[in-house]
Image 1: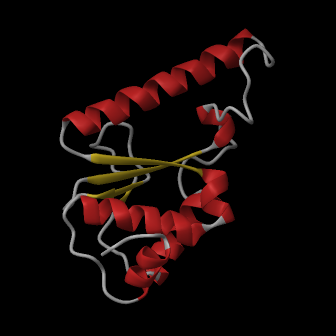
Image 2: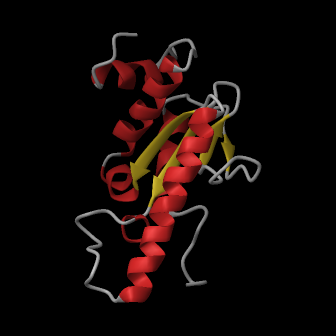
Length: 143
């Protein structure tokens, strides 16, 4: 499993490029001091973003328990329990947590960036002027 990337995956890079194109900055990447080590953390606004791979995090359309054997069932169940625990720990610490599936980010990085922008506005960040605001408005925001 050492062959699989845990950082700078294609979907993470696509999301960061979409955020940059939207003019949204101010995040840190893979912050080790936070529970779950979020892929992106907007520390000023306390917004943590995770981009989860479908297989490793048990997307229902990709991984079905009982089909890959007991090792994988246990591994994916532990991953899901860890995801839940880290999201809960961040939420309890006052963070807003967003979990995105990598396939959704790769399919439409701008929609993922708009979701992050909505979370930032919800967390108290002033609405971004310019391209990021345009994306926010296209996605149904009222900011």
